[in-house]
Image (cartoon, rainbow, N blue to C red):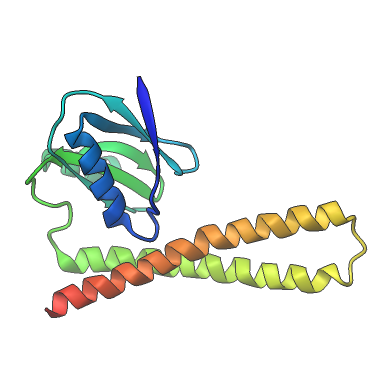
Length: 175
């Protein structure tokens, strides 16, 4: 039997979600997947276990990298383009042991999401401006406006999350 829980904001505070997954495993509910849109975690019941979870956001995860993670003790649980969640026994060496590579990944993702958020923001502003000049049916205006807002939100929030993660990461390094 499966159990579902809402994602707490993987793009903004991934550490909270990883803690949620860890806490659920301690109760005997282990992550087995996610909904198509990434809003819900799917858990399967099993024996309580102390697992650590790690998030990786590589755009493409090739077989060599996957084999490396598995050899390091990390099992892939969720593998999508741009989002991977791994699980390992508590105390396993973290996925990122090299601070430079972790910072580079965060910076690269921040840049990508920042570009897409900017594009959707410009399209959104442009569409709002054009609504006054175009004589389309109101329903078409609303559908396009809604689609642009959704696209903007789902690129801007991860951008903010990566900005926050980069700030916290750099603050941690300085200490």
